[in-house]
Length: 210
Image (cartoon, rainbow, N blue to C red; front, top):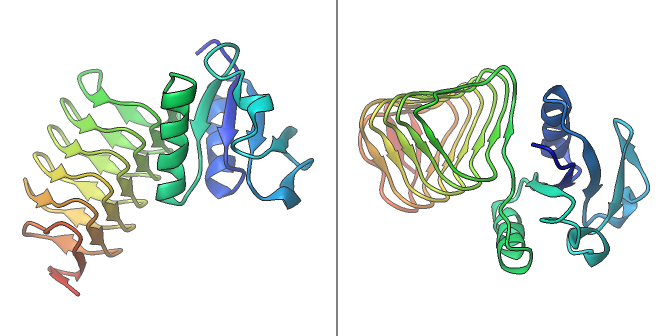
């Protein structure tokens, strides 16, 4: 990655992304954040310059800068992905911690956040804008759709298929080649042993719909 990066979002996820890029020796141009109170402040000597739709900064993306979206609210993240794609004709870069392990045979899309200890196995697939927190395991041939968030320490077993917009809490296990439908939510620490329908919220060991 040769270009400096603009990070959208100056919250906790933005700070984590900054650390990842710095450990990978990538220059961060600035943060953009819609909280005006943060403007002019610095995080690790990187300035928070303006709003996420500030054309004075976004105009450089795709020419002189790349972008990474570190907004924690899914719909806001998806909105920035759409803006970058439609207006700037680019997709966000990936932030992959140097202590993450991603198979060379895995398929990784755009805008991935993969923190320390993440493992993505052989021939696994990870869609657009996924967030894999510390020590997540995506085993071989598992598939994640777009904008899936997987909490720290969770395990997605081989062959599992996770649809778009799914949230999986910290320490959860998808225990087998199961299917989790679009927009489903898996509670922290849950053990999923059967398919989860779209939009459902499940919790427990074994996980049951609530």
